[in-house]
Image (tube, rainbow, N blue to C red):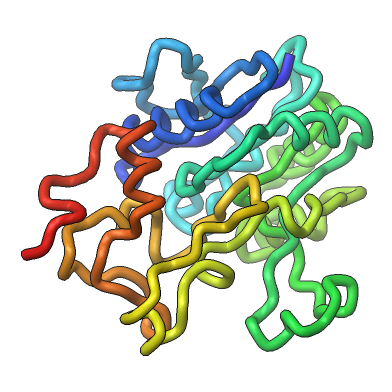
Length: 268
């Protein structure tokens, strides 16, 4: 059994975001998958999604809001009985292809498989191996249950001390994981770094739809639902932004989501 898992706590993300993600994963999958949402509120989830409470690991309320530390509870022993591999995906991601290769890679190699944090644009002229290493990016990772128990056990035994080792969950995994494998570089792209254009080109060209990547990662601004707002609504950062809905993102929402917001794709 392969488990695809996500987290949802607080009010930042709704059940619609979970449903959007998992509908896309299920539609594109070539293998049977189980879907688990670790959450403090299971209401509104699709019937095929199993809701589980987020395991307790000694976190204070402020740790839930800063650094995504609850993600580490995914490594609690026995949380996914019978699973051969677990693939964790953040809710602000777009799944464009079958994720079976991710699971097969995890099953074959073991240890922690995780995104490598991207470098600034200037380093793109260098081969990946020559670029400065910036650690792990925890928007997408996979593991075999039982092999990463030590992360949960070490953290929950002394949370205050462990919080001092890193400023967020992905920095912690970078230093705490005994062995890390990074996903193949072309499997995942950053929307902000690889799809969006710099201003003023962003006013002329629509963000590029990746042709080879299996997953588009959204980190920081914008998030995918920002890209389906009506024309005239600004999205993006100070140097990469636009004022129009992005067609291929809009199509994704219409297929897997709850419909685009009223007026999306129209002027005015």
